[in-house]
Image 1 (tube, rainbow, N blue to C red):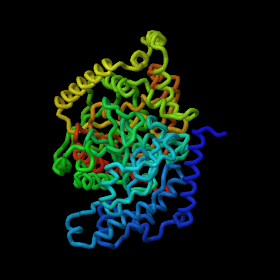
Image 2: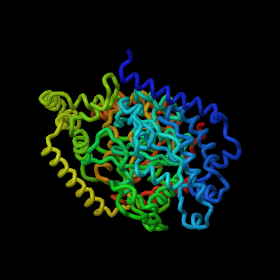
Image 3: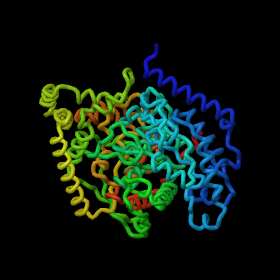
Image 4: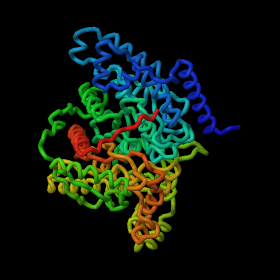
Length: 571
């Protein structure tokens, strides 16, 4: 007899197939009509204007985006739940209220007709919130998250939920429940995690905006891998209540809700309109900070950018370093001041953060899976490390100290913490935050630039070699609670971005720590040719408007330098 885990997986896959069969029967598997292509090309603001004026209906919007969504799922396996009719029904109910002058003038439904996808961590009444785990299949929640209610009140079309890895923490999006989600640019490669399904869907044009979450790059790494835009806000700036975690109660390095979008202007408009609806009146976790347009408009003044080329753990691979160099060169051509930035020790910050996230020894995530259910290999490896006897890890640390001090430090530090130890780590984290603040202020920086990840999109199945620790370039800003965004810059080139001949036998490679060796062991410019590459723009706490403005400056500089990122039509 199949196990409970297998029964749940089979049940969910039958459910999804039935939904797909129904959508095929309704004509969602045919190409877009010319009218639908026009709708699909509209920006968020233009789409809202057309729907508010009655020239476009929510149902016609769903006709265009629904077809793109089904094609995206067939290509990448990115959807965990289809909600087409329900979504358009709610949007049509709001549309019926838009006939008055009052509505048009006040923007009472500021997201009317906007297709928004939800990461499968966000509660929407009547649907499972699986978090990629079998135990959550067949248990639809009864109450929607405040963010969902806000979006529905704004007239948005919440048409799908998107796939995540089992228990969320990972760098590949795979679970026993949904299988593997693949990259639309090359299905032999992945989409990152944990908002991997959302990244794939946006890249295929199946949504305008994805509601994501982020604790170590979960919105930004998929944006980097998939050639879209991602923004991680500071704690409290965006509604978070009703978003389910595999680590409930974690406060020391908090998960935040974030956003991803197909276009930067759409990301800006979405934030402006959501904050304009006073989300703090919906959600107790959200701070009452209105939209500050003055922070966004940076004008013609020249800015000072600090560049973090390396995190002290893993140097970026050639393709990712080239993407960062393109941004630096383009900004300099516009007259901006760009300097190398050496912050306080990043490895120390990261080790402190890892200890806080795994202070329970990984027990919550380990126990979230049903017997026989697989967690992703990088997470399993981390939990296995935590479970090793401390005397054995200390012995290994002593043995590795002279050849790999970073790995030795990880071995010594990664064990379950007492309450007192956790509080000491929190105090250390705050001391590091203070030192970063001082260094940033001393340098008088407007922004910091760095890579979105040291690798382009991983080849499927190589996540364990790359390891969770490779996400330091994004994770550091979660520990600091800084606002950070990723924008697409260019693509991998198999010639320009190739490693030097004999690199894997070189002194440089042999001198790397275990994390960097793992990353470089899976880097292959030829296999990765044509995959997107992003760059990260970072501001300080609560600087969401300013970071979006900084992303716009970068995009303008790249355009002026003739380095425009042109996403491909994938489906």
